[in-house]
Image (tube, rainbow, N blue to C red; front, side, top):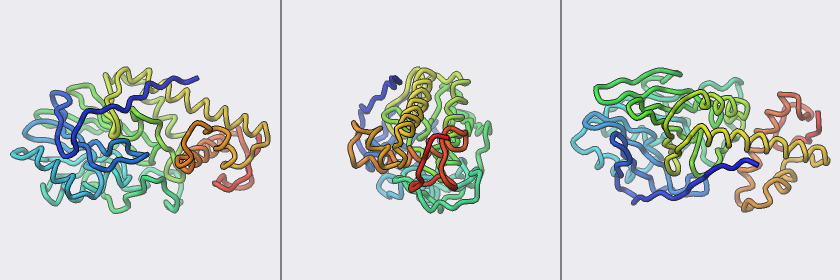
Length: 302
């Protein structure tokens, strides 16, 4: 069984910037939920000239707290990992106050491999208003006198998800791709389990010292952590295969069987994750259904 060393403890106060490393400060937005833990962790990188990573929801008070933290400094760039409403809407507010350039992932749906619209989104929701000033392609570098960020494209949680390496500290801002407190929701159509797994395996080839996720505490020993995440996902697909072998053919029934220990109010999100696994399994020949897999499909062993 996968043994993911999740941690939820973060010492912080809403509205206050904490210096968490020589070049990194964090202000946590007051948007706690079952999907955001304590709230969105907005990171401030650098001194004097700074970048703000994931300014969070459309919350003027949170943006005021970020501005207070950088008083007397220049915000040159706003950096976005992906376009869920707890991450990117604050970019427009912060840009209006600072004139900073938005450098980051593409618009919502950028990089998706099909033409479907986002008719169904996860509980986090999609920010369809976001547009970057400069698109951060994989391996692009934002270089300043005091710090440098490098984009690491990690689609899966969303089609446009991008992590960012702070080269001076060999630390990866992992957005929602890897979180220290919980597994990541992968919700079709924009979420894609195959691409998510490939993006996790991409991180195994790296040598980052630690991760700073947008939700939850710092992740140390990240390779081992990512390895356990991959193992967990593989075990979920084995559970689905077992359900199919027992003629449990519909997603709600699979969720009841697979998530007995998970609170019922999280079963809707769990169903989206099971769907993403089934899409992956159908397309790789390990499950079958009539037509394209969807939440109401009847599934069977391929």
